[in-house]
Length: 214
Image (cartoon, rainbow, N blue to C red; front, side, top):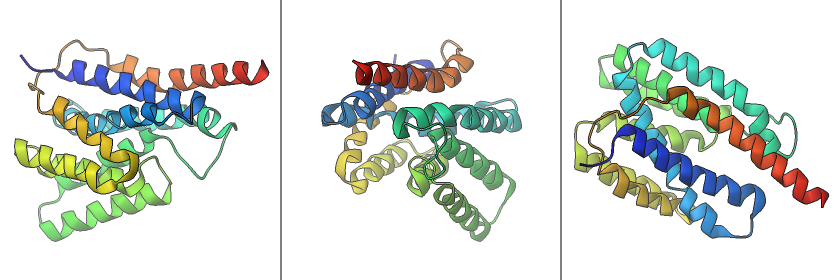
């Protein structure tokens, strides 16, 4: 019973597609964006779970960093209509910084040091202007520190979405799916999910260009 990691990823991907379809093709229809807010909390939750279950954290970081770079041009084409733009970076950069932060937290023992590491990670995400910026790092930290406290973790995650305000408050609905997580992995399609992100952005950009040309 419940939802495994693979099923949660599928929910996150589907809601992400809806979100990005609305942003690129139907910017005036906010319902797409409301539904899409569900995806990021799920990705952050799974990032933390993946961190604790991976056999090689350094390879995990390398994959995220590599796909952050690979995805940047598709991201800029889809959302900025330009090949390369430095003022906004894709969500893989946020996830990469989040994993680096968790790695550092695992290496340190004292709370004052841990607090500094979280602040530095938030600063890094803010400086590189990654998607969700420092607030995204805050959510990853919530799921990291409260990982073994199920209801505190989900309550804090829902509060993060609600306190953000505007359309992100709809991300609180992700909590419904996250509470059903059964701790199981499910089918392994690791690289599919990594590759899907830049691929779907290129498809959306292509459709946008076709629509503009008509």
